[in-house]
Image (cartoon, rainbow, N blue to C red; front, top):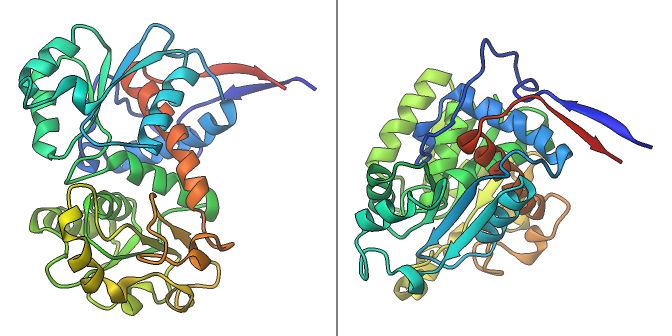
Length: 334
């Protein structure tokens, strides 16, 4: 049976007075987005996941400029661009040597003459800022040491899929306060979600991020709670989230971090303190037996692999918005 689906973007979470457009804009931080932007991106992702392949970006090229290796980020962006009718080019660290073989500014000046957007995965957030300042095409943060906005948007979309709402939910993050938790915290508070984070002393939220988070919480009416004890954060939570204890670039600290974070493992005992219908989330890759047990990672409460798939759908929306803007689209599918 053939169905004709009229996809009306920006129409699921709320009725908008004129909507919003990210066309031609950089996305370096969650702070580059408004509450309305996030609502509409999540709404569009619901439609985009149903729509599948769309010829929205048939004349567009995206470059993936990576200083760090990747599985989900690279594949999800490449497939997203392909499903939108565009193409992508991957540049590995060895091919570019950004900031070493060639200055960041010169790389930006060169690439913006070839492509329509730059997706960059960097060690230093400052690299992204320099790229954006010298590029005439949009720059998208695919991970830096400060933030991971594409992951946070995916997380909110996944939570919305599973819970049917965002505002009023309680998100508990357990572990290292890192780029993933920074973006997730800002996005959640911006959307009126209570956010609780438990980290050991010395690994807590940076002052700059905390200041912005407090502003977002005050504006949305959400509750922001920081503690050292994971049990306090997880108690009564709708979402329990963790990430690796040792990120790329911190390998020399691995053993030290294992000792410090030993009490921050998400296991069945800790997860039982959350609501009975709580979901478990992790951006992957997971270190089995460290930050999470296999029993939790593969449990019915885990939405980790749905979360991984959703990277592609959310990034399709971002690319369509940034490179072309979304319009009402007619899709014919079986």
